[in-house]
Amino acid sequence: MIVVVDDRQLVTDGYASLFGREGVPSASFDSTEFGEWVSTAADADINAVEAFLIGQGSNTLSLPRAIRDRSQAPVIAVSDTPSLESTLAFYDSGVDDVVRKPVHPREILARAAAIRRRLKALANYVDIGPIRVFSDGRDPEVEGKTFALPRRERRILEYLVANRGRRVTKQQIFSAIYGIFDEDVEENVVESHISKLRKKLRMRLDFDPIDSKRFLGYLIDWQ
Image (cartoon, rainbow, N blue to C red; front, side, top):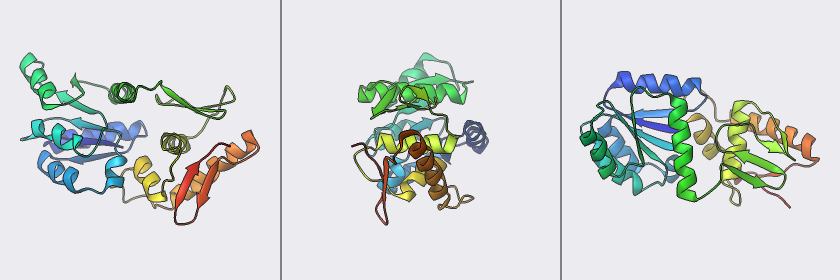
């Protein structure tokens, strides 16, 4: 999920539409609302955020420090004014990157992925047994061959692999895939997506690498 902060509703609505076309959930705040949310939100909601996008607002320059108190996700500023002063002000506030309008959502996603790789010193893929999951939106691979998946199933697999070694709940997966404020989708839809994903993995691997426990959640494992 991408969180967009801008005091102009027209801007936040536009980003919600653009990210939606890319299959990426987003949540929008004005700068005051966001300052309150980021300090009080549940850890599960904060952990569902892949990147924060900061635009114009009355107190946006104070937000990157507040974000860092809760999250290590990339913080990217979008500047409307191509001036050295505004760019330096954003960097001084603690953002990881500054982009200038107009900017395509795919570029924002690519920059966020690059920042995450630098922060974690990781390659752009993670291997777990014969499964290779990429961080740039490509389909995963199984035993070196492309393992094509629908967008939702691919993102669930990416989330499980990113959290390998610890169990995640259905609600955490839902928040990561659909966003924490999507009231138009039932949370139980996650079970349907995971069931289809597990069936496809079982057919390719001859066993199911996703372990589930009632009330505890899901864990991807490799023996």
